[in-house]
Amino acid sequence: MEKSSDIELRLLIEAIYLKYSYDFRDYSGASVKRRVAHAMRQFDCATISALQERVLHDPAAFMQLLQFLTIPVSEMFRDPSHFLAIRQEVVPLLKTYPSIKIWIAGCSTGEEVYSMAILLREEGLLERTIIYATDINPASLDKAKQGIFSLENVRAYTTNYQQAGGQRSFADYYTAAYDYAIFDKTLRENVTFADHSLATDSVFSETQLISCRNVLIYFNKKLQDRAFGLFHESLCHRGFLVLGSKETLDFSGYNKHFEPLVKQERIYRKS
Amino acid sequence: MNDAAASPIRGIEAIVVGASAGGVEALLGIFSELPNGFGLPIIAVLHLPDERRSQLAEVFARRLRIPVREAQDKQSIEPGTLYFAGPGYHLSVEQDRSLSLSQEERVHHSRPSIDFLFTSAADAYGPGLLAILLTGANQDGARGLAYVKQQHGTTVVQDPAEARVDVMPRAALALQTPDHILTLSRIGSLLVLLESSPC
Ligand SMILES: C[S@@+](CC[C@H](N)C(=O)[O-])C[C@H]1O[C@@H](n2cnc3c(N)ncnc32)[C@H](O)[C@@H]1O
Image 1 (cartoon, rainbow over the protein chains, first blue to last red):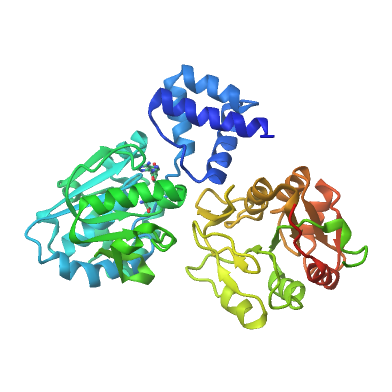
Image 2: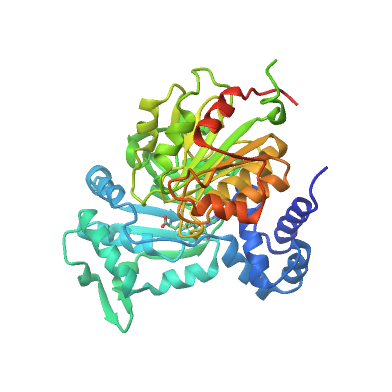
């Protein structure tokens, strides 16, 4: 017999899908269950059904719930060795393209986008690159568009930047104002921020490089495969796919369609 | 087949273990007698400072007779294998009995969290789960252990009198009376006696 709370959880996820078209049905269940429990405490709801009633009848409450369901943690130059490997192993090959399209899927609040833009500028590629930065969380996308991060965090990012092979002083890229670092807006001149879901939307452009980091761990295998399918379709011949440090193609049927370029750093190439 | 000592814990399908301060020695203590060919999966969270790569799996692989791995996202759980949560990510067990990683906020300052592992494993294995909480300096694991009990799993806490740091076992005891309070050597012998019986 199924537990009542498990039934309620499935109904909540179904209701969200039917009402708001956000599809969490194939996310990793353990994490979703915890996120919902966390939201229940924040919303002061005693049951998942009560939470469902709230979000079904109040779009603003759903937007709040979405903040709990998505996990926005990010950093600039997160896993510096990963960005170093992109600089050393991928950039030389990217340089052979006259124009470059990059898709950052699940960009959250933008830290990864600005990191990539800085790297590309230092390699002389930013001017001929278009970056599509997508996410399902509109609040995160708004933050990403602003490019304002807390100065306290920027201190840690500075170390990351240097370890990632940064060539300048990190402070060249932002102006400090009070407790914030406002990043150079020319970094996002060629960036298009857009609402796009790997669970429900389709491919929108051909790309040379796709970075999807720390998003796929929240998906089950079926949804991961959907995402890999989109990436495979979007990437040009021999295009690059980069994943988060704990994400891998190893357990997916798509591993046949990609070959590792720098396995340790989760950098793959379409084969 | 065996004597009464094994009978209260038949039907175990998986083992989860949590520890922090003093945990390396404690885990080596309880696993050292496990024979090659041991039939059950073991999934462990041992709190360590966040570093990019942890040496745990390598350290234990050298000392134990069973295969030891760092847990990977979406990996199916193999019998007879010891999985360690890597640093910086929570480790969960999914309903289909595969492993998953996530980066939600820390629990009791810890990521990976013992509570998250125990709770998700209890959802996946129910009465088939054996959960063991050992030495440690914080309260992570106590609630997870209580939840394992609620889902009719079997719970074991290291005897606090013996624990290097007794905060973790005592926090568990304060929340709920486990099925067994045992010394490391008794836990070790209990594991060796376990056999999986299909239910
Ligand atoms: C942990 S953040 C990763 C941020 C960044 N890529 C990094 O590695 O630092 C995960 C992001 O994935 C987004 N996300 C979750 N489900 C998604 C989906 N179906 N399609 C696109 N993005 C999604 C979340 O909104 C969240 O912003």
